[in-house]
Amino acid sequence: MSLKDRIQDDMKTAMRAKDKERLGAIRLILAAVKQREVDERIELNDSQVLGVLEKMIKQRRESLAQYQSAGRDDLAAREAFEIELIQSYLPAPLGEAEIDALIANAIAVTGAQSVRDMGKVMALIKEQAQGRADMAAVGARVKARFGG
Image (cartoon, helix red, strand yellow):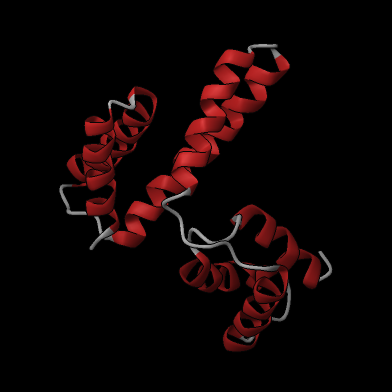
């Protein structure tokens, strides 16, 4: 079963359970996926759906920080709920040792020598760690590895 099918099944389950908050969040996910499919005129595969989910989480984290700083606890709670729900569709996150191993492997495979080669390294890591690691944090670790 594809990730998109799983999300659609969860929407049907939420409808049957009359869980309005969960149903609304799942509909937002499906709307974002459908929007990308319409824009690009393609059927998204699981890795592309993961990309959409990661983007949604990033947007919600930014909104959550703004709501918390503005003292809007009601909106912050909704964003936190949506983040948690979206994360439930992502694969299990990688541990520190696994990320370090991916970085070391990517550097060895690409033959990277300096920060200038970081793009090649990050492209390879993103392919393997999509949805399982915060790529900004991974990028910082790669940069630190090169001493940059």
